[in-house]
Amino acid sequence: MSDVGLALAQTKYALRGFLRDPSALGFTAFFPILLLLLFNAIFKGFTNFNGAHVPAPAYYTASIIAYEIMLVSFASLLVRVTTNRERGLLKRFRGTPMPSWVYLFSEIARTLLVVAATVGVLVAVGAIFYHVHLSAHLVVGLVTYTVAGVFCFSALALALTRASASADSASAIGPLAATILAFLSGVFIPVAIMPSWMLDLGKVFPLEHMARGLQAAFLVRGSTGITGTDLGVMVLWGVAGLAVAVRSFRWEPLASGGR
Image 1 (cartoon, rainbow, N blue to C red):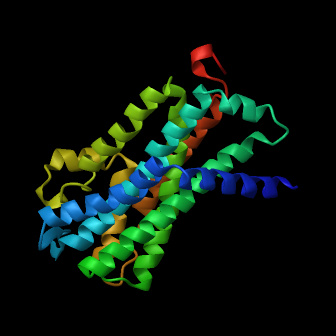
Image 2 (cartoon, rainbow, N blue to C red):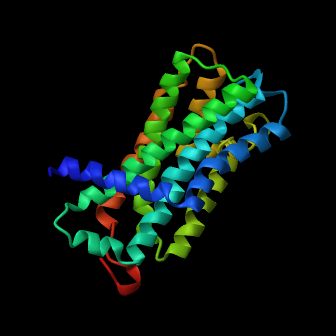
Image 3 (cartoon, rainbow, N blue to C red):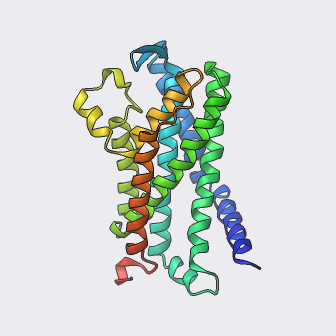
């Protein structure tokens, strides 16, 4: 079997393992839906976006999609890779004839597939229950930011595995970082009521740019939400994370001084 065939087969096994884990499946599939329902129950009617009054359900559909992309691509991947490393699974995997990159490819490919599925569910919930308007422009922006988000946050997750000495530390770092950035990036709180210093701080990080781009795609008719600044910041963070990951990623457990 070719290396590409091995990569696709490993991706299938990784996805099958995810589907057989009820807790992971439930958290990934139902948690974002619950958040969408809760925020739409709290923030009803309209909110302000770039000086215009826009439907709150569309705003939060875009926002929760951005949060879900980061949660799965960053927090979940960080925890999963760190846990497998500390259990010695990565060390054993690297000892097989299969190329090392196949494992990383399968994990990122699985992440992309899971993100695509959950984003599709959130869009469906928004359209069916909250009458969120869908268009071809929105789909272009949604696909672009989804792919860019998975690349960016997956690279950052792999970079931070070196700083996560155990599964417990990864379980704390990943979700905590995602939650803090969600508050700074206009995901949980409408940007219209956020203090300016918080908005300025959020703009340093990629989640704010992904959320803003998706919000524009959902809220501005005829717009994809794609801007060079938003995509550029995400790509820069992703490239920086990839560069760190290439130099610092470890296959052996850190608890045993692995390299």
